[in-house]
Length: 316
Image: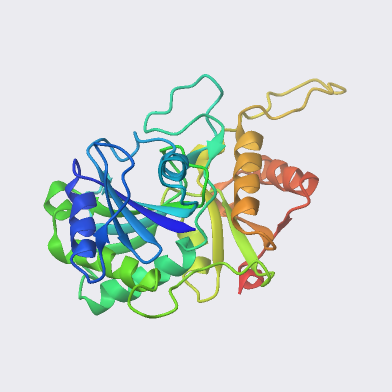
């Protein structure tokens, strides 16, 4: 089994960390997959460089296995981050567009009603990245944060994005690139250590499925920043489209709440289960971001799926 780290030469916030990572010892030319994709090998890690948008190259895990015979255990994409605030940031997040209806066109890759299995390293690497950023004096200039599940590309193995934001000034920052490279180096155990965030299917640990809140999932992050917390998908409010029931006459039995929120939760739950075999999935709701009818509907649906909603202390 090998780990794919994927970068694109079209993005300075992608190729910068990739180049810093390749400058570390132990790399050799990797197997051939495509004339437009270069690869490099270091132990069980494979670094791929292509020329397209980072969200445009679908099924790289499957294509790699077909071309090389090597099975892929996880994928890590390197990318730039954009934000209206323009604030410098280092971010980590799972991917998917589980709320889109079949037939919709995803604006940034992926496939409607789909979410990749979240990489179990998301939580542990978020905490490690924050430590590295502090040690490298990037904080407080850079914010280290999680992001909600969003965009593509399509993959079938546990996946996450590591991003540098939020403007061109920061995408090319060498110190930020070095921090991401160091995260990869230490996190994957290429420094001679044991690595960080490898899931043990026999641990029966609890896994947080985040539901509700804003794109930077602040109330969920308050829990995830604590040591030992594992995290699956992070569904913000925009991934939970809910249509408020109209006022109906007494006796009207059609009281369903429309929207694709059930689909989004179900798809993300199944993807999280597949990424954490043996794990105990608990939902954490950002209740302050929800109206009462929304919270009640979500709790009812989770009960149907045999998923309990946990309080902050339940995840520690």
